[in-house]
Length: 360
Ligand SMILES: Nc1ncnc2c1ncn2[C@@H]1O[C@H](COP(=O)(O)OP(=O)(O)O)[C@@H](O)[C@H]1O
Ligand SMILES: [Mg+2]
Image (cartoon, rainbow, N blue to C red; front, side, top):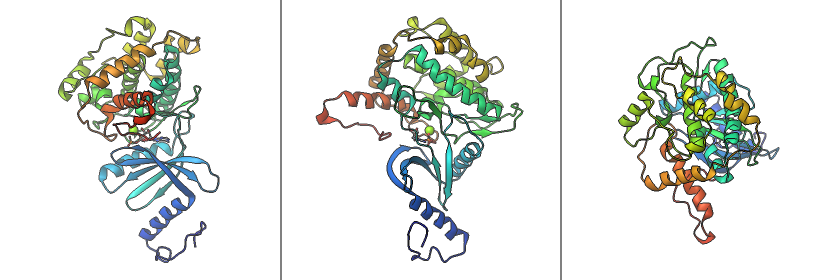
């Protein structure tokens, strides 16, 4: 029997082939961890919450299907990065189990939900709160870039809160599209990838590009955090890409008149078309908005106009079209967050959420 008491009955243990060894590895995983709930889903992956049987400690396991070539590539990118990094704002990999068709990545569990769920649930959101989130994210991106790693899929659903408390740190996750190049930092990438609304113009132009694509995505994320709307938003993919290529976004309408000029300057310097002129993560950390605002006391409450924008989006785009890439339903994530929020406000008798997503 294995250590956990599973009997060596089905012929699994007597074989010497690699196949059987990998199946033993899976068996070992289930002996060690008790699966509790499904908490996330992507095109090639599922994420489950588990409990370590001996210590009762909770963890997350990302299960990646490796039968398809894409699944294998996503898995390889993710492991290449996670095995190299150690940073308080990057999800920590604990151990890995492999079977013939799946890879199981045991990671620390983030229980605070995704960035957008938090903005809505919190009931208030300030420039100060945004800069505190950005400080943590920028610090981890600066670290990744110093190692020659580009995330390439930064977006609010890949930024998780470690715990439900107000003072929770943020964890950068999902390195399925990450590229780990050399340390020189001038290593050029060519693969066209990312999530449409967050893709940098140089990727769309199919030019060789650098880690500056992460800085662009951070500009998009900052815009969303402060307004609850997307800088580049268009149902039609071709028109969306045209807007991005021209860098056509605006600070018109609510809540922008109430947003500081420093915040707008910060966004403008990240949403700069020429990647050579774009602020780097390490420059962004030193931008006066980040430096002064993160240290300041509570500011104007932006929550109302943010949630108004989010809800307007949700009602005007009930049937958003499918968009590509690993996370499947990325386009409707903002809407899903709003619907989850609205569901929580409903009288208890009909508390069914019409959309999928995490079970929290
Ligand atoms: N360590 C974790 N702790 C808690 N939830 C997680 C964790 N990792 C992922 N999730 C949840 O699962 C979702 C999908 O995981 P992710 O790594 O982004 O996979 P994909 O590559 O399929 O997008 C995330 O958006 C998040 O909600
Ligand atoms: Mg993801």
